Length: 230
Length: 226
Image (cartoon, rainbow over all chains, first blue to last red; front, top):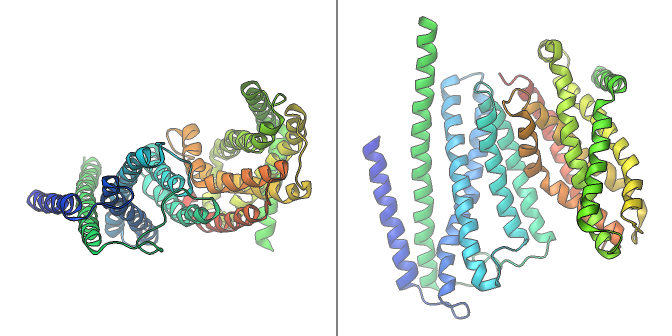
């Protein structure tokens, strides 16, 4: 497992380095914002990944709730996936907020605006921090079920939160990928490389966390068994 | 019919328990009053009537939210004494009826607090609402239900947690922020008269319907979480 992990890590670093090269040296400088725009190549891929991982968490949690009575071994694996995706969600949303603030200071003149998109990203962050807190505070036998229920609630909450984008006046730039904006082809290539790199790195981290949680579960089961036999 | 009867029995039991002790209502009432006073000291609302109008809706709801979290934990604490929760787990009655009865009881308590507190807020903050007051008949119950339904559910979720007092707000606040946003916006719209509260009320209604359904469907899982 260690060898695969280091291989995946190496591949991630190579992809990230290539994405960095594409974004900094290949992509042209944007007309109005200048070099400041280059943070877009990290900010947007990180945030897109940060919106995919919560749904992986919710699907794993729903699957956990349906299988926990029938197939205990599978349920434990699903719970491990839920933990790993939740932690990486917190990491990615945090990174997305951080890169956004670094961009916002020179572009808007302020670090933070209570704009709809920023607020919804912050709420996503808070929801998953509370998910991790609940896992920590709950008694160990109940934690997976309670966390899974909370994950379903968070999953329902996210679209409602995002819906508020259209309601609140927004200061955030309009989405360039599917909106009216258009992207230079070389910019698109740099963006796609970074998208692949960041998503791949996120998946590597999730896989590593999953493997660690599985080990912890096996140790706990083994300890419970030896305690029973003694 | 049997389901409704079970809900009614749970509601009646919770109302009777509260009537005998009056601890949840008295606690909430005093707590919200203190919040109103503390905010008034911090912002001097009588000196700035326009600012008071813009802020008081939010202050009222934040106060109610804080007060509700204190009483929601009490409402499940009663079920823990004498292993009542285990009896609920073994009972053949629908678990969601227990949730619904308790949520309705909490709804009545919070509505009572609001009925007492809203006039106090108007007096303390020297408010002259400029919008249409009739909207409040819709906004207040919908907002109450949003806090209480989710709050009752999450309080049950944290029943066996190590750090119960902290856990309820840690879960309830992030999930109910869309509701808090829409209810404060709608209330502010009524008080200031600057914009129409209609769209925020619709969002609030949607939130209530979606999350009440989720609570009813998932309560059985939470009750049998072990």
